[in-house]
Length: 455
Ligand code: C2O
Ligand code: CU
Ligand code: CU
Image (cartoon, rainbow, N blue to C red):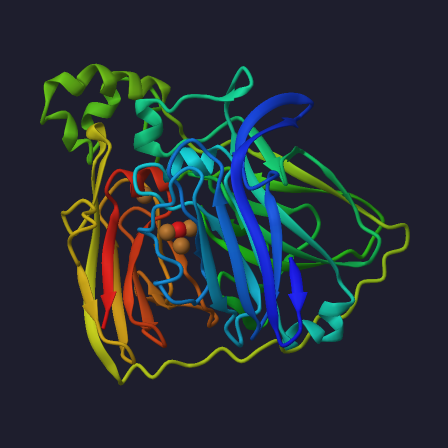
């Protein structure tokens, strides 16, 4: 990253096959030069010229997840062939200080490319970071990602992986298995990304609350005290931790049931389970279905992700009393209200939005720049799906009719089974074509994506 005069930043990234080691074992991944890729530290208002080169032997591209930049630049349908480069030039929006990330976006290949390690963080800094209680905190990024290997290679995707999204038994934080973070200061500021394809993290720190200060799209208005924090795939959060005593404290992922098939008790029990409608179409699927029942997942196990060691006499900073102003959207001026139903044909590993699979040649939603829309998202499947919209940050208005306890900008929101989630989206600044999709990227690859055109 080179910072030139007059607010111009030049950076470059390349995707390549990389040999590294995880947990002392040599592995071959696809990366942007490391796992995770280099963190791009940008500042609000600066113009970035990011040169991306594909050194893989397959097509890829680069998506700037969560950044409000033109879809002509951050084009989810762009194809960068092996050996080719593309320049991504954009301005970092004012007021966007927060934690974002980048990863590939080739429909049909996202799951395999992301799983293999193609991901990295984007940190945007802004005036709000100068608040003393933030500036004096000790900052760390935590990239949460699981892996499954077979030998030194990523384990091949199974039919079950395409249904549930691929998980793995090796849980890593910044590609390290159960690392120890030795804190020097009394307050930690953690920028946490769930970069897993499909694993959910229900985070809790022993003996300490988490103080949420930022979500996907930047700061909340004041810290929100949480006992636990659920991060679905694609989501980010920033939290403060106030260490008040010496000792070691485990950051844990508590058990979470995301409804990835219901298989306790094995085969027959599942025949009664609703939502396995796919089984009745297509008897040839039944062997797979039976295997699925036996092999499937229930709630995840409790896992320790990281151990935080507090300094001998920690002196935590006071909490910041206010962080930022999160705009209150004027809901009397809604130009359109739309419904999106998430559906699946599980045994075929086919996923739908409003009954249709992704078609890059079809525009599913036409919206007008400068308008505000309300989208009602409905999960008609038996599994959680994190719904993600590119380019245009949104606010969650309600989940199952319950208003949100605080205002926040988001780009990904989780829907549990049967959830009805209402979000408000201002279509600002850019026209162009972009997408919304499930961020269990196997589901995206298998159809759960739509095309949005803003005119
Ligand atoms: Cu991080 Cu279209 O996704
Ligand atoms: Cu995205
Ligand atoms: Cu999904």
